[in-house]
Length: 261
Image 1: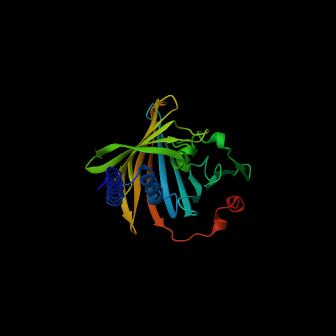
Image 2: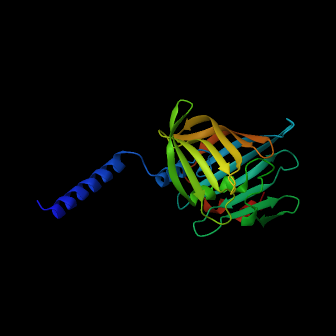
Image 3: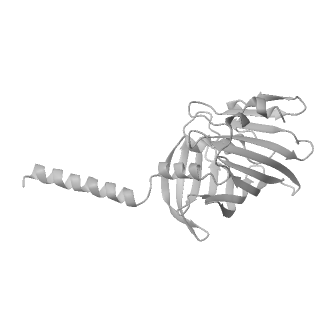
């Protein structure tokens, strides 16, 4: 066998081996992120949730926000969702509509009962806090993660669970974060820990999943905490009631329906 032919045979064998290893081995970072988006453990795509967010400030004072959310998948992994605030009294009746898009910025609308109309939230406001919590609009739309270049940094344990450690670098100019690191359970693709970093590298926030439940074959994070390291605050999020939804009418996710509050 000539040296040239031998090289071709060896190269072909290597490529076949690599393809086989990929098929039965570790998925790519992009595949893991797509699985995370599809798993939807916070009920942002195809579920009805009744939830509470308890905000604790740097002095230990707390404030509770209660809300009802409904969502549906459209052009997976994209989603449409409506959040209606139930309390406290000064926020009751406020509603939020989000429609994720693949070709540009997502649509975000906020209905204020005092004004009796909805106003659009511009993309440059994505970094702002959602209803006084430590979750920003960017945390809710997940676009910084959706549109990112990701790599697998290693494999680690979070508690007793084997996880992939991913580093994602958002690509959009209006991204809130310069880097997002997530630790994703290998058995169900639920992220157990997120760390969010600014463009300068400063560690801004940490999101920890503290309780998971399986409902109708889907895993949901029913208790989690967002720690805000800059302001020494935190927000504990509880999904008290969860109902997976197979189908929801599109007209629920319109500005007109939002203003029917």
